[in-house]
Amino acid sequence: MKLGLCHAPRELTVVPATWGRTLGPAVFESQKLRGGHFAAWEIPEEIVADLRGMFGRGGPCYRIATAGAKAKL
Image: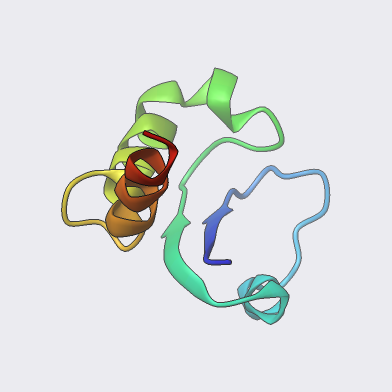
């Protein structure tokens, strides 16, 4: 399973970025200048941009997302 990480400065617990990489193969990472635990509510446009960057055409998980959809057809 591939992993995407988003680091926000006002998260409930701010830990070193390298810790997230121990959870699996991180293929996408972003560092935010603002936002925290509720980043999707606080900075929705940045979260959408991250999701598009990870799952959109040319992103590191684009093939996985489209392959899964084709397999279900």
